[in-house]
Structures are given as C-alpha cells and as structure tokens.
Length: 210
Image (cartoon, rainbow, N blue to C red; front, top):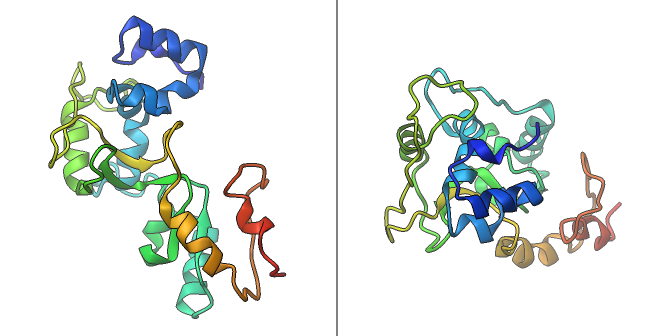
C-alpha cells in the first residue's frame, strides 16, 4: 500500500520528507527525532510477530522453509542461517538464536537504538498497545493519539524492534561470523533472494562451497 504520512504522528517537515521518499519512515534520520511513525506503521506486524495474546498469536507463522532450517539444525547439519528477512519468523521455529544472523535486523527482538538495552517483548507489546495508535482501524482499544515508548534504561524514546534503519550499520555479528562460517563449507543453500543487495549477497559470492 502507498504510505500515507498524513495518518502518522509527525510534523509538517517530517511528513514532507516521507512524501518525497517513503523509506524515510524507516530511516535513522527520522527515527532519532520521532519514534512514532515507525511504530505506527508497523504496529500490527510487530504485535503479530511478538505478542502471545490470543488475538495476535500466530498472525504470522513460519513456513516450511523456516522449519527446514530447524530440521537441518536438529540433524547437526546447520552451521548458520543468514537471513535478509526482518519478520522474525525464524525465531518461532525454535532454531537457536546463536545459529541465526538476521543481516538486516529482526522484528523478533526489541532493543533501544541508543544504548542497545534489550526490551522484553511482552512488555514492549503492552506498551505498544497502550501508547501507539492504530492507523489501520483494526484495534478498537488502541489510543487515539500516540505517545513515545521510552527505553527502560536510558529513558530515551528510541525503543523499537531490532531492524536495521536506513543510515545505520549492519549488525557486527554479520561481519564477525561470515569469514569463519565460510571456511571449509561443503554446501551453501541460497533461497528466496536475488543476491542484488550487498553486503548480504557476499555470503554467496565469497564462498567456494557448492
């Protein structure tokens, strides 16, 4: 759907930025000034992934491809999964967190963009329901106006799912693990990607595996 900045909690300058470039809503330049457009835009998706409440639970479910990765892990065949998806569905299969590297971050974890302090998912979902309005008209219990969700440590309104915003660096896990993960690799499975986005595509381009 087309982004509608007029529905988001933003000033005129921020709305003009989003009208000129819709990706501004997921940029660090905007988020560090105003947390709310990001949270309002992704409110139902975040709750669908993270919430344990019956009305939200399993709104987004892993596919057979996600469970294939879990089977590989259970059989001792998985060295690591690098994913460009931010949906966090890999976490729902039970594949260990340390075996996954979400290259562009993930909705499956929440943290402060400032101090990097983790924010418990159930508490974040509660805060999201209480503080952030529903621009989609799905949740009748949502507030009519949004208020920021502060970090539980530094107090700044910089809390969000741990996706990588435009203008921010990729997780260091990617750069630290990629070289050793590609050493003596017998098989690399590439699925669901065009390999056009760097540096994520370098996982396939830098290996000698079949």
